[in-house]
Image 1 (cartoon, one colour):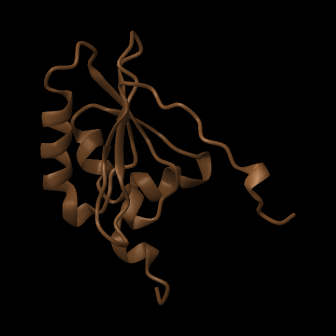
Image 2: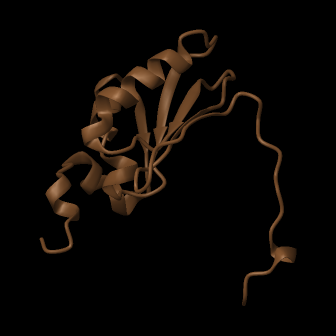
Image 3: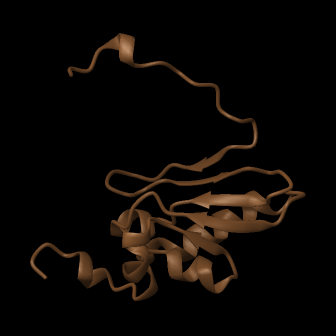
Length: 116
C-alpha cells in the first residue's frame, strides 16, 4: 500500500502534552497525561543527554498537580531509551515491550552498536 494524503490525518493533541524537541538524530522526549494516573514520559533520549533530559523533565513537571509516574519506551534504540535507567532510579515505572525488558534492565549502549 502506498502512502497517500487520504491515509494521513491530523489528530488533536492534548493540551497537557509537552515535547522536548532535540536536534538531528536525537530522540525527542514527551511528557503527557496530567491526570489521576500521573504523568508519563515517553522515551528518555540518549544516555549522554540524561542530565539535560532530567533538568527539562523537572522544569516541565514542576507545576504539575499529578506526580511523575511512568516512562513509556517506544523502542530501545539508544536515542529513545538511553536515559531510561536514570528515570527508573527516580522511581518511575518503566513500560516497554516484553522483548525489550532485558535490554532495558541491563542497559549498555555498546549492546546496540551494529558491529557488536
